[in-house]
Image 1 (tube, rainbow, N blue to C red):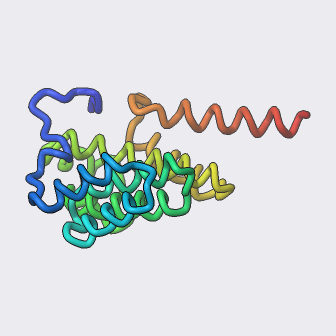
Image 2 (cartoon, rainbow, N blue to C red):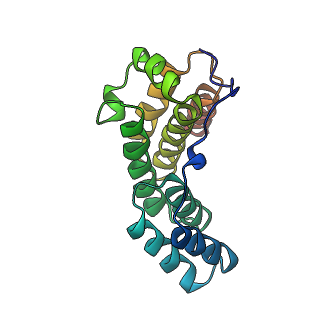
Length: 169
C-alpha cells in the first residue's frame, strides 16, 4: 500500500468544525505565545474533544513550546481518536498490517495521519529518554509502513547511530 497516494483522500481536517471551536482556534493562533492562547485551545478541546484539528493545534502549541510531556499526552489522545475512527484496536501495540487495508478504505488521509502521530509520539518518547517506548512505537510504524514512506526507519536509524557514536566516544 502506498501511503503517499492521496487521490480522493479525505483529510483529518475535513470534518466540520463548530463556529465557536473555529473561533477559539483562530483566537489562539492570533495570540500564540500569550498566556490566554493555551486557555483558548483547552476550551476548544472541552467543547470538541474528538475534533482532530483541535488536537493538532494543542499538540503543535505544546511541541513548539518544548512541553514534550504535554505534547505526548495530546499525541496519545489523538491516536485514540483517530484509531477509533479507523476502527483500529484500542492500542497501537495491537495494530497489525491487515488493519491497514480496511482503514485505507475508510480514509487513506486519516490512516496516514494516524501513522504520522505514531511517529511523532515515538520521537517524543525518545527525546524524553523513554527509549524502549519510543523504539517500540517506531518499530510498529516500520511494520505498518514497510516501504518507509513516512520515514520511521530513517528516524530510528539516526537515533540508533547517534547512540552508537555516543557509546564509542
